[in-house]
Length: 455
Image (cartoon, rainbow, N blue to C red; front, side):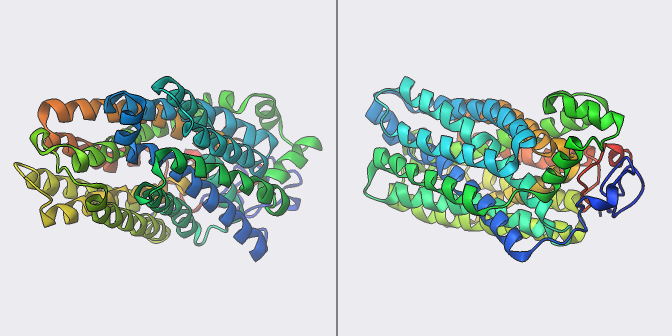
């Protein structure tokens, strides 16, 4: 189990790694008001929920969109990947802005961008316009995850931080339910995308009601007063990305990015090929289910995912971030093995398939752990940028490669193999997680260098 670490000065309550004016600055022991914490968590939850709707809608509407635009499903898979590429670019850039200009302000920019771009997708006249809007929308969704978790982690006390992180991560699954409702509704794909203009109104509420992170404010105040030591002053003059690519943070960033490449390859490959398996013709190995017949699968999988994400976050407070992550990877890998056995020669939606798919999805409860873990891995002045770089570069590489590669594998090797490959990757993540420092549950401080990573 991860143990709380002290800061560079060796104290748990001081906020500065320099030892100057540390006690006057907010640290993890500084009281937060309950309304402050609740508003912050609500803001992160809503931002992540609506970004999930943005991401999932195109996955669900692959075939109707392809037919309407006169293209094939593989082109829509590429469009999904283009959105993830935009997410990588935008997430890396916007996360750095959050470390410079504030978590709440930049979170609002992200919500506004993906809301309007997703609505724009409903106006697309061809695949090229769809990809352009998808890229712009990806820019907006890219940084929302890292900024939201940085904000929540800096407001929450360490006790129960994993539980709250699991709750925020679970909003992706609630957003998926919203996307499913739009998919099942009579609106059609254009109006379903058009509805996504409404979350833009959230930006007004964010700017009026949600307070800024006290740790980020303390960092800015200390920097303005010249209270940073020479090393932190030098880092404060650099772009956050430059700070991430040197010293101890370089090794941390490379290993964390590798983890996210594998995670996103598995997640987006599985979610895409799963939908195709439900919808594809029987002669091509699919189940040929109608939209209504797909609903039990969609509901069961998302309920299982929601429960596992929240449960994994809660468990990470008890047994540690790494152990909880590895445990859920093992569950997902076991489910994938069962699914592979069941899908050999299956014709029709055999009842055990629903149970096997649900167990596979339980493995993705790891998403309830990694948001809090990444926020704890990086110091305050690059907390959003660190998570944003690793998660979004991993999403851009793994997420863009996963759907077309596994989709092509389904066409050549069949759906059983294509569905098993993401599960094998999830199982490998149970080992990869131990490459990261075990600093989960540590005290967070406004001013800190990377000394806590040394052990």
